[in-house]
Image 1 (cartoon, rainbow, N blue to C red):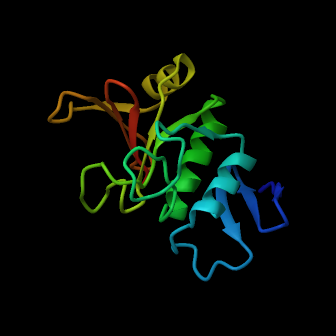
Image 2 (cartoon, one colour):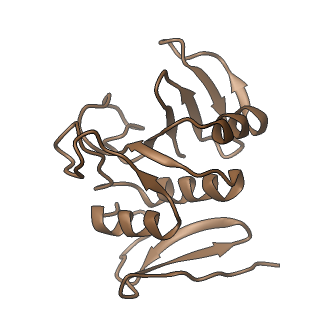
Length: 164
């Protein structure tokens, strides 16, 4: 049986629908569920879910590589990080989003598929115990694949996560 929980954010601009343990982000004016999110919208949804983010430049501009931006984030990526927080019960801190300075490609930060998440004892343990370890990446980063095909790569300073 499905359970539904609605969390209102700001001036009722968004809510989360939690259905059978899967978080999905929606807004009242969203044309399609695949339409990329805007910075303010994504930030409000993340904040309402208790997620935090850091930026070396203390900014959110997408064109500045020292910022942490969510402009253009895919709704499925937002859903993925919300599911991760719910399943892991860890406090998550995002350190990279869609801003410039990341590698290009179809499943890239700039395309809205990836987030960088700071490591923590809780998150490290969760990833290692719940996801399947696969071959190391070309740069030597250990990789873990979820049942939903998302990919976690342990870089020196963060988890590079591709949400599918």
